[in-house]
Image (cartoon, rainbow, N blue to C red; front, side, top):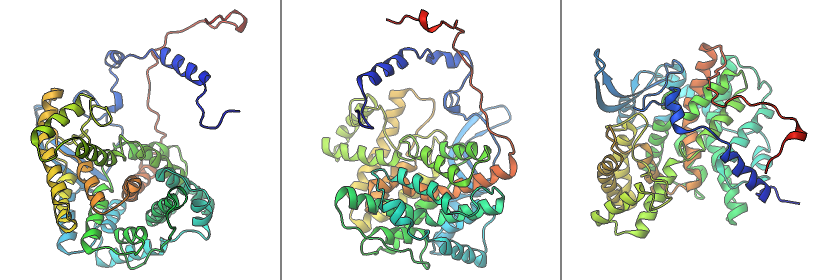
Length: 455
């Protein structure tokens, strides 16, 4: 009897047949005017809906259709993220809870509203009795995103009103998930470390007086200690990952699944499945791994060797042979990614506290050299710049966060945006999202079983 993970010769044979019988060729997309990935050749997204939650802008189009690239703009509910960040940093306070309030309720909270909101999240920051033991520790896994998805689906069984899709009930469910995501992520990692890496098991409880970022750090670290700068920079990263327009893959998934009328737990689990992919939420892991490979293979202070390595990356001759320089370029932004701009200065501050100045300078050198190399090798029509993954990976490394938690931390932030989009879809759409596909397979005649001959 074969094991669950065995790929038998029969399966290999059938897989090859599947590949041979796929008749969709790249040129067919142009012939039928279909935009692969819902993006045209210039990178413009196919419009599939309306939203008030956030806006991503990288260009200005005048009345004659002339396009002028601009520094990237990201706005939450109409408020520029740069201004939002300036506001809470100026006041020397944490911003993730404020950003979440803004995304959910379309207005900035006053001091009383923000404090009440924080208290609500603190009250919800607990899991059902025995949940950690029964759902996480008794079934440890090797992938934190899968454990996180499983845990979210399991919470359905503990909800006395799971299928009510009224705005009030969905808001309650979303707030509970926003509150417990740090716990689900860290506890999943602790179980992985214990059962698969033979590490000591420790489970800390969240503290109601701490922010989301502070709780995440104290839950993760055995001694529960962290510096103020560490917590502030992690909080900033959460703010910048909380939302990014309705067109990103996991948020679009949230809209699609919500439109079917299903419950919140199934919807968020689907979004998590999307975010897990290395083309979406796993990109900053690739950045860190790429830089580690560079450090092992070249002199990182020699710009000539760095350039040669970057060319090899594009030629599929280095690292994972994917032909990509991870952390450079974005589907929308060209001149700059505002999130990367903000994180860049924070990464510099953190590198000085943590003794990573040399590594930070290495990242800066790659950020300076790579765009020109990409432009020349790819004959691109627009500029490229570092994206948010370029610096978030470095920041997480300096915070001593394990690679396994990079994407769950992304999810801990993005659950705020997903929640806002789920509520918006419930309120405004009212129709199931059913995209159209053009069938390009020619008609065939049915042949009875006795007359079929395959050699």
